[in-house]
Amino acid sequence: MHNINELKSLLSEAKKIVITTHHKPDGDAMGSSLGLYHFLLSLGHQVHLVTPSDYPYFLHWLPGNSEVIDFQIQADKSIQLVAEADLIFCTDFNALSRIGALGELVHQSAAKKVMIDHHLEPEGFEDFTFWDVRACAAAELVYRLIVTLGYGHHIDKDIATCLYTGIMTDSGSFRFPSTSAEVHRIIADLIDKGANNSRIHELIYDTNTENRLKFLGHVLSQKMVILAEINTAYIYIDQEELKKYQIVTGDTEGIVNYALSINGIRFAILVVDRGEARKLSFRSKGEFPANEVAKKYFEGGGHRNAAGGISFLSLSETVAKIKAILPEFEEMLKQ
Ligand code: 5GP
Ligand code: MN
Image (cartoon, rainbow, N blue to C red):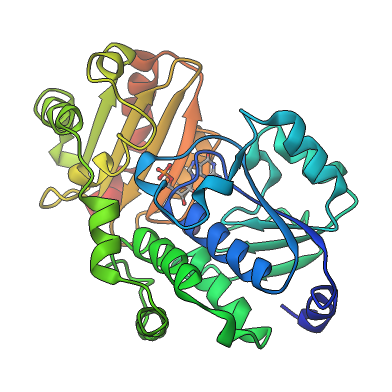
């Protein structure tokens, strides 16, 4: 960020601050936002975190969770907070379309906007940019911002816990190529400052319900299609299955990774029929650009190895579309 001193001087007096993050926030969205939330509180600001939607139950233990305002539940309060804010922090996204109806409100607000993100192609709605595509998580950037502002000593157990969670979830538990030595140094510092690494892993990953495990078994045995000749696997889930297994927000997270974990598979796709639309998750290994497929055909985007998109075709039409477009990428997939 080239105007870091300007931001620091804005933060030197008490401000009304709203933090927001992307639709259906994941571990990094909530970890980075809540880490920032506790940090800004420690500076004496009035801070609110407004999410555009609900988020998975396995993030509800995060410190500060009870203070989070869900725009879909508390619309009037959210509208007022955004309109009256002096500063709006946007974490883990870089295009206002990623926050749905909140996007227009943020756009209209006179507040100065700070974007903290690691996705490609920022649209540039903000006044302050803290953006690095090489960062493994927005939470890594929040850590770096706090340190760059000269407030590293403000990182307490709550901030450390939130940032650890964001980095852990977005780096695939420190396994993706973006997990640099610097990330491990940051993680070591967060553990020093009170993050309980073993407990956090348990709270995030060991939260299966019986239903979810049975659902996973059903999906993997009945709904996964392997296209071995093009090193691709896809999984499609219909509404009846979601209902039968009482699937809630967060339950389908990570399922796409099972398809990608098959030996030789380089591209994995998960399609979930959410009723109003079909949501797609794309994961790839190596050079294959999952985000380009998402962007070109499914109104989405993301990172090279993890992307998402949407389809307004029926579930079977969406699957047919996937099969129809894959030959275009055959050369790359076979490499
Ligand atoms: P997921 O499959 O976990 O929903 O998303 C994977 C990655 O793709 C995340 O980094 C997420 O931010 C991004 N992503 C998911 N859905 C969309 C979308 O509709 N548009 C864009 N631009 N990115 C998305
Ligand atoms: Mn992220």
